[in-house]
Length: 163
Image 1: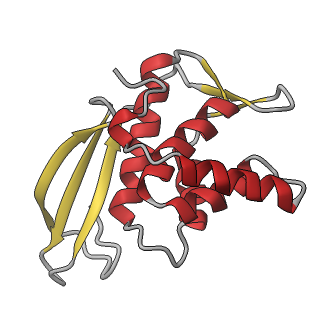
Image 2: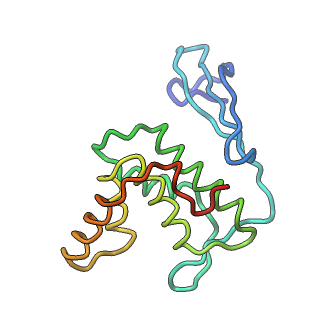
Image 3: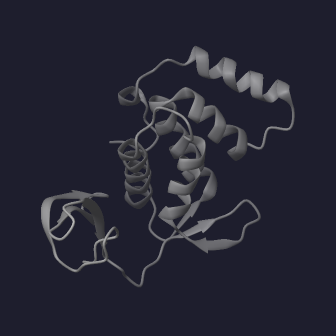
């Protein structure tokens, strides 16, 4: 694996963990040339792709990177670590693959991301929700903020698809 920092092809695996319900292996690597650490993910690429059914009824291939991009935008200048963002994406992806085989509505993905994000950072959640739910007025935003303040349950109590 080439180091993203020095581009050398000499590293060793420091830690390996399974994620995404066993579909992904996360590896922490140490570059032997520059001594910096980086993370790689190994995923099985299969012919049975999962498709996302969009609001307009079109179908696009599932792309985890879109979830990560949305989370990163919502968490700008918030005390949410990159590891927490990865964990939210992991839990979302696990729930999707555990409950859907071929197609998943985009609304399910959005609700899952919001559920996990709300438990981590309420401001980032409001940012994500304002884009996802496409608030048309300040009243809709205030209503969502009020609802969020009233719901103080921890992530363990939330059950959309969790076992």
